[in-house]
Image (tube, rainbow over all chains, first blue to last red):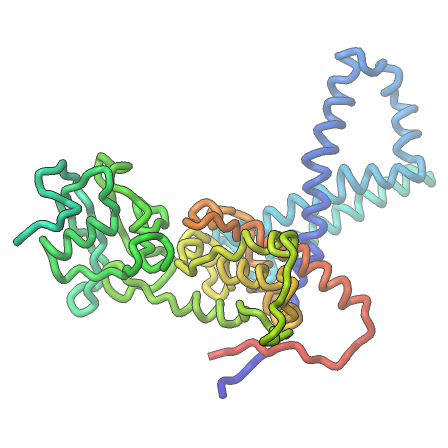
Length: 124
Length: 261
């Protein structure tokens, strides 16, 4: 009888779930935000005062502002790094687990940086 | 010699360039051109028959049914995987190049070794498991239950999707489009109870997770199966399966073993 080895469950569901959630944010939320925040005042949908620094920073550093950080920075980061990781594999530039560590590691580090800056804004 | 009735020689001709590989004399595949008569009804398979009968009896290729159901005559036509019997010369008036299916080792001329695909197919147990139907009572299914899997049941195992798949090209251990689509088909079948036996292979790196949703498999499928959809639905199933397992109390491990050669 041929030797057998156990099927090993892939850890890809974690990265793929973050990638998928990030994809929804990149495809739906970010274009909507760009329309609202960039073209809003120009089209007269928003007054420039509504986007004043005080107002926007108060909104961002509200406890629910963490949702904005998650949807606009953290999930899109994982989305982008997942694409880059698989792109490197497709181009046969990197097959190693080092590439995986670098890709998802940088997403984790940049996410922590974003969360840290947000916490700094909330509490300082 | 008498011409076959389907391709009279007074018809127009085009140049068909065929990939040849005769292991006893060629170090690598070479191209050979033939002037082939054709009309509106001449398929690539008809043209190969004509070459074999009229020009070069040494040409080797697989075929059987001539009507897109046996899945034997898959070839690359101008770089795209196609069934020879379902591809017509009238669509290539400037000539065409016919090669062996990509991503498989070539045995001779247009004949490839499909063992890797068959190996993957076997690993995913594409048949009903459990609940044997009794002689007196047929297994009943509602139209809704049939509809859930029917789309994925039309696979003819021609292997075109494996030739189309860049991930299978990079990693032949990837279980691949047709095998995963068929595993999905049986997992969706209300009569089947074999999901637990198939899931470990699907959950592995070489299961659904090697797919990057290129989607070319679904484009080339001659039967309109959508393997890319099956695999990506399979990713959701695999993720749910993982979440359930991570939050379940530890049980006796009965996961199937991966055969290694």
